[in-house]
Image (tube, rainbow, N blue to C red; front, top):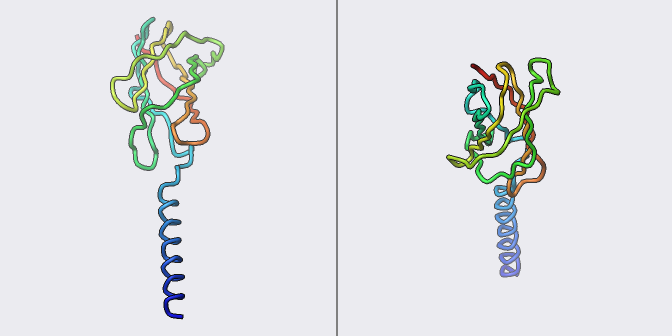
Length: 135
């Protein structure tokens, strides 16, 4: 009878250990991620470079290899949300930093809207970032 109880105790301990391991590797909530501007002031012009960093808010670590599927830049901060500009993705210069080239034809406030998927996470990271185009 002692062997029977020892086997059950060992199985229970193993099950508890596996459960804890599974919990510790569970994915984070998508709300724990956000885009942050690398610089809030950007030189106005038809080849303005806007860089953002995707970070885990809990650790501050940059998140590489996200799939950005939605980009828009407009002058909503200056009351002109219909004033949009062309924007295109550029190659990254460092992991977790995403760069874009935009035609910021007017100085003033611009809003960059982004939507992205993070590998291994459920949901979409969506942020609206305000920057300033300066002459």
